[in-house]
Image (cartoon, rainbow, N blue to C red):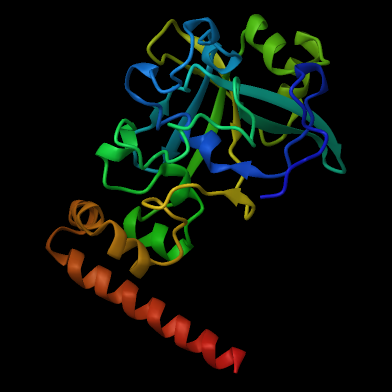
Amino acid sequence: MKTDPDIVGCIKNIDLAKDVCADGICCFMSIPRNQTHLGISKLFLKRRNASYGIKLLYTGIQEKDIVYNPCKCLEFYLKRSETPAGFAINVLLRCGIFGKKCRPYTCNDFPDKSDSFMHDVPAPCVYNEYLAPADYIALKHKHNFRLYYAIRDDRKLLNKIAPGFTTEEIRRTLNRCEKVVKISAVWNEKPAEYFLVEVPKSACVLYTSGVHPKIESVKQAYNLWQGHIESWLEKHYGSKWQSQLDRALENEGGMSKKQNEQKQ
Protein backbone atom coordinates (compact mmCIF):
# COMPACT_ATOMS: atom_id res chain seq x y z
CA MET A 1 0.00 0.00 0.00
CA LYS A 2 1.34 3.41 -0.94
CA THR A 3 1.43 6.02 1.78
CA ASP A 4 0.93 9.75 1.40
CA PRO A 5 4.07 11.60 2.59
CA ASP A 6 1.89 14.57 3.58
CA ILE A 7 0.06 12.57 6.24
CA VAL A 8 1.62 13.28 9.62
CA GLY A 9 0.61 12.84 13.22
CA CYS A 10 -0.37 16.43 13.81
CA ILE A 11 -4.07 16.96 13.24
CA LYS A 12 -3.51 20.44 11.79
CA ASN A 13 -1.47 18.98 8.91
CA ILE A 14 -3.77 16.08 8.02
CA ASP A 15 -3.98 15.64 4.26
CA LEU A 16 -5.90 13.40 1.88
CA ALA A 17 -5.18 9.66 2.07
CA LYS A 18 -4.91 8.33 -1.48
CA ASP A 19 -5.49 4.72 -0.47
CA VAL A 20 -8.27 3.09 1.51
CA CYS A 21 -7.28 0.87 4.41
CA ALA A 22 -9.57 -2.11 4.96
CA ASP A 23 -8.57 -2.05 8.62
CA GLY A 24 -10.14 1.38 8.92
CA ILE A 25 -13.45 -0.01 7.66
CA CYS A 26 -13.13 -3.01 9.97
CA CYS A 27 -12.72 -0.64 12.91
CA PHE A 28 -16.48 -0.19 12.61
CA MET A 29 -17.20 -3.90 13.04
CA SER A 30 -14.17 -5.82 14.30
CA ILE A 31 -13.49 -4.03 17.55
CA PRO A 32 -12.63 -6.47 20.35
CA ARG A 33 -14.97 -7.22 23.20
CA ASN A 34 -15.01 -4.52 25.88
CA GLN A 35 -12.44 -2.50 23.90
CA THR A 36 -9.58 -4.08 25.88
CA HIS A 37 -7.27 -4.73 22.93
CA LEU A 38 -4.74 -1.96 23.41
CA GLY A 39 -3.14 -3.24 26.58
CA ILE A 40 -1.96 0.24 27.57
CA SER A 41 -2.84 2.80 30.19
CA LYS A 42 -6.47 3.91 30.34
CA LEU A 43 -5.17 7.46 30.04
CA PHE A 44 -4.88 6.84 26.29
CA LEU A 45 -8.36 5.40 25.89
CA LYS A 46 -10.17 8.71 25.56
CA ARG A 47 -12.88 8.95 22.94
CA ARG A 48 -11.58 9.92 19.51
CA ASN A 49 -13.59 12.10 17.17
CA ALA A 50 -15.41 9.28 15.29
CA SER A 51 -17.19 8.23 18.47
CA TYR A 52 -19.07 11.56 18.61
CA GLY A 53 -21.37 10.70 15.72
CA ILE A 54 -19.79 8.76 12.85
CA LYS A 55 -21.39 5.48 11.78
CA LEU A 56 -21.05 3.02 8.92
CA LEU A 57 -24.37 2.41 7.14
CA TYR A 58 -25.07 -0.69 5.04
CA THR A 59 -28.11 -0.26 2.82
CA GLY A 60 -29.63 -2.11 -0.12
CA ILE A 61 -32.87 -2.67 -2.01
CA GLN A 62 -35.39 -4.73 -0.01
CA GLU A 63 -32.83 -5.19 2.77
CA LYS A 64 -32.92 -3.90 6.32
CA ASP A 65 -30.33 -1.19 6.90
CA ILE A 66 -27.48 -2.15 9.20
CA VAL A 67 -25.64 0.48 11.25
CA TYR A 68 -22.15 -0.07 12.69
CA ASN A 69 -20.60 2.05 15.44
CA PRO A 70 -16.87 2.84 15.34
CA CYS A 71 -14.11 1.78 17.67
CA LYS A 72 -13.69 4.63 20.15
CA CYS A 73 -10.02 4.91 19.13
CA LEU A 74 -10.89 5.67 15.49
CA GLU A 75 -10.11 9.08 14.02
CA PHE A 76 -12.20 10.39 11.12
CA TYR A 77 -11.39 13.42 8.97
CA LEU A 78 -12.95 15.14 5.97
CA LYS A 79 -11.05 16.99 3.27
CA ARG A 80 -12.75 19.25 0.76
CA SER A 81 -11.54 19.37 -2.84
CA GLU A 82 -12.77 21.08 -5.98
CA THR A 83 -13.50 19.15 -9.18
CA PRO A 84 -14.85 20.20 -12.60
CA ALA A 85 -18.26 19.01 -11.39
CA GLY A 86 -18.08 21.00 -8.16
CA PHE A 87 -17.05 20.27 -4.58
CA ALA A 88 -16.05 16.78 -3.47
CA ILE A 89 -15.49 15.32 -0.03
CA ASN A 90 -12.73 12.83 0.76
CA VAL A 91 -12.39 10.79 3.94
CA LEU A 92 -9.36 9.81 6.00
CA LEU A 93 -9.65 7.06 8.61
CA ARG A 94 -6.88 6.23 11.03
CA CYS A 95 -6.28 4.85 14.50
CA GLY A 96 -6.17 7.76 16.92
CA ILE A 97 -3.29 6.24 18.87
CA PHE A 98 -1.27 4.28 16.33
CA GLY A 99 -0.23 5.21 12.80
CA LYS A 100 -0.10 3.10 9.64
CA LYS A 101 3.41 1.88 10.48
CA CYS A 102 2.68 1.05 14.10
CA ARG A 103 -0.54 -0.82 14.85
CA PRO A 104 -1.53 -2.41 18.18
CA TYR A 105 -0.09 -5.92 18.18
CA THR A 106 -3.46 -7.42 19.07
CA CYS A 107 -5.05 -5.57 16.13
CA ASN A 108 -2.53 -6.85 13.57
CA ASP A 109 -4.52 -9.99 12.78
CA PHE A 110 -8.02 -8.53 12.95
CA PRO A 111 -10.50 -9.87 12.06
CA ASP A 112 -8.74 -13.22 12.59
CA LYS A 113 -7.98 -12.76 16.30
CA SER A 114 -10.07 -14.79 18.72
CA ASP A 115 -11.21 -11.64 20.57
CA SER A 116 -12.58 -10.01 17.41
CA PHE A 117 -16.31 -9.94 16.74
CA MET A 118 -15.66 -11.08 13.17
CA HIS A 119 -13.84 -14.16 14.49
CA ASP A 120 -17.22 -15.47 15.69
CA VAL A 121 -18.75 -14.97 12.24
CA PRO A 122 -17.44 -17.38 9.54
CA ALA A 123 -18.30 -14.87 6.82
CA PRO A 124 -16.57 -12.17 4.79
CA CYS A 125 -16.25 -8.61 6.04
CA VAL A 126 -18.83 -6.14 4.71
CA TYR A 127 -16.18 -4.02 3.00
CA ASN A 128 -14.66 -7.18 1.50
CA GLU A 129 -18.01 -7.94 -0.16
CA TYR A 130 -18.40 -4.30 -1.15
CA LEU A 131 -15.30 -4.72 -3.35
CA ALA A 132 -16.24 -8.20 -4.61
CA PRO A 133 -16.86 -9.04 -8.31
CA ALA A 134 -20.34 -8.29 -9.64
CA ASP A 135 -21.08 -12.01 -10.25
CA TYR A 136 -20.55 -12.76 -6.57
CA ILE A 137 -22.79 -9.91 -5.43
CA ALA A 138 -25.52 -10.80 -7.96
CA LEU A 139 -25.57 -14.41 -6.75
CA LYS A 140 -25.39 -13.89 -3.01
CA HIS A 141 -27.24 -10.61 -2.52
CA LYS A 142 -29.38 -10.44 -5.69
CA HIS A 143 -28.84 -6.69 -5.63
CA ASN A 144 -26.10 -4.10 -5.29
CA PHE A 145 -25.68 -2.83 -1.77
CA ARG A 146 -24.01 0.40 -0.75
CA LEU A 147 -21.92 1.57 2.16
CA TYR A 148 -22.01 5.09 3.58
CA TYR A 149 -20.26 7.02 6.29
CA ALA A 150 -23.10 8.58 8.27
CA ILE A 151 -21.94 11.88 9.78
CA ARG A 152 -24.21 13.50 12.34
CA ASP A 153 -24.95 17.15 11.62
CA ASP A 154 -23.56 18.39 14.91
CA ARG A 155 -21.45 21.49 15.43
CA LYS A 156 -19.08 19.84 17.90
CA LEU A 157 -18.50 16.87 15.60
CA LEU A 158 -18.02 18.91 12.42
CA ASN A 159 -15.43 21.04 14.19
CA LYS A 160 -13.51 17.90 15.12
CA ILE A 161 -13.52 16.17 11.73
CA ALA A 162 -12.80 19.06 9.36
CA PRO A 163 -9.55 20.77 10.39
CA GLY A 164 -9.03 24.15 8.76
CA PHE A 165 -12.72 24.84 8.12
CA THR A 166 -15.42 26.44 10.20
CA THR A 167 -18.56 24.48 11.00
CA GLU A 168 -20.62 26.51 8.55
CA GLU A 169 -18.05 26.09 5.77
CA ILE A 170 -18.01 22.31 6.00
CA ARG A 171 -21.79 22.19 6.41
CA ARG A 172 -22.27 24.29 3.25
CA THR A 173 -19.79 22.08 1.39
CA LEU A 174 -21.60 18.90 2.42
CA ASN A 175 -24.96 20.38 1.41
CA ARG A 176 -23.59 21.41 -1.99
CA CYS A 177 -21.89 18.10 -2.82
CA GLU A 178 -23.90 16.28 -5.47
CA LYS A 179 -23.05 12.82 -4.08
CA VAL A 180 -23.79 13.66 -0.45
CA VAL A 181 -27.28 12.83 0.85
CA LYS A 182 -28.86 14.13 4.06
CA ILE A 183 -31.31 12.04 6.08
CA SER A 184 -33.07 12.05 9.45
CA ALA A 185 -32.61 8.92 11.56
CA VAL A 186 -32.78 7.49 15.07
CA TRP A 187 -29.94 5.06 15.80
CA ASN A 188 -29.63 4.13 19.48
CA GLU A 189 -29.86 7.77 20.47
CA LYS A 190 -31.96 10.91 20.01
CA PRO A 191 -33.29 11.75 16.52
CA ALA A 192 -30.65 13.48 14.42
CA GLU A 193 -29.80 14.49 10.87
CA TYR A 194 -26.92 12.76 9.10
CA PHE A 195 -24.86 13.49 6.01
CA LEU A 196 -24.25 10.29 4.02
CA VAL A 197 -20.90 10.12 2.21
CA GLU A 198 -20.56 6.99 0.10
CA VAL A 199 -17.58 4.82 1.00
CA PRO A 200 -15.20 4.75 -1.99
CA LYS A 201 -14.25 1.54 -3.74
CA SER A 202 -10.53 1.40 -4.19
CA ALA A 203 -8.15 -1.05 -5.88
CA CYS A 204 -5.45 0.10 -3.45
CA VAL A 205 -6.49 -1.52 -0.19
CA LEU A 206 -4.33 -2.75 2.68
CA TYR A 207 -5.35 -6.30 3.57
CA THR A 208 -3.95 -7.87 6.72
CA SER A 209 -6.35 -10.76 7.14
CA GLY A 210 -5.54 -14.31 6.08
CA VAL A 211 -8.94 -15.75 6.99
CA HIS A 212 -10.77 -12.86 5.29
CA PRO A 213 -8.81 -12.21 2.08
CA LYS A 214 -9.94 -10.19 -0.91
CA ILE A 215 -12.80 -11.90 -2.76
CA GLU A 216 -11.65 -12.82 -6.26
CA SER A 217 -14.45 -15.12 -7.46
CA VAL A 218 -17.59 -17.04 -6.49
CA LYS A 219 -15.62 -20.29 -6.35
CA GLN A 220 -12.91 -18.89 -4.09
CA ALA A 221 -15.46 -17.29 -1.73
CA TYR A 222 -17.56 -20.48 -1.62
CA ASN A 223 -14.52 -22.56 -0.69
CA LEU A 224 -13.71 -20.12 2.14
CA TRP A 225 -17.21 -19.59 3.57
CA GLN A 226 -19.24 -22.56 2.32
CA GLY A 227 -21.71 -22.80 5.22
CA HIS A 228 -22.37 -19.07 5.30
CA ILE A 229 -22.94 -18.77 1.56
CA GLU A 230 -25.15 -21.88 1.37
CA SER A 231 -27.44 -20.62 4.14
CA TRP A 232 -27.63 -17.19 2.47
CA LEU A 233 -28.49 -18.73 -0.91
CA GLU A 234 -31.13 -20.98 0.64
CA LYS A 235 -32.71 -17.89 2.20
CA HIS A 236 -32.91 -16.21 -1.22
CA TYR A 237 -33.62 -19.13 -3.57
CA GLY A 238 -35.17 -21.84 -1.38
CA SER A 239 -34.75 -25.37 -2.74
CA LYS A 240 -33.27 -23.99 -5.98
CA TRP A 241 -30.17 -22.58 -4.30
CA GLN A 242 -27.88 -25.38 -5.52
CA SER A 243 -28.83 -24.85 -9.16
CA GLN A 244 -28.25 -21.10 -8.79
CA LEU A 245 -24.80 -21.75 -7.35
CA ASP A 246 -23.94 -24.31 -10.05
CA ARG A 247 -25.01 -21.89 -12.78
CA ALA A 248 -22.90 -19.09 -11.31
CA LEU A 249 -19.85 -21.36 -11.04
CA GLU A 250 -20.38 -22.60 -14.60
CA ASN A 251 -20.68 -19.06 -15.98
CA GLU A 252 -17.63 -17.99 -14.03
CA GLY A 253 -15.65 -20.97 -15.32
CA GLY A 254 -16.68 -20.19 -18.88
CA MET A 255 -15.65 -16.57 -18.49
CA SER A 256 -12.24 -17.59 -17.09
CA LYS A 257 -11.68 -19.94 -20.03
CA LYS A 258 -12.60 -17.18 -22.51
CA GLN A 259 -10.24 -14.74 -20.80
CA ASN A 260 -7.38 -17.25 -20.98
CA GLU A 261 -8.03 -17.81 -24.70
CA GLN A 262 -7.95 -14.06 -25.32
CA LYS A 263 -4.61 -13.77 -23.52
CA GLN A 264 -3.16 -16.49 -25.75
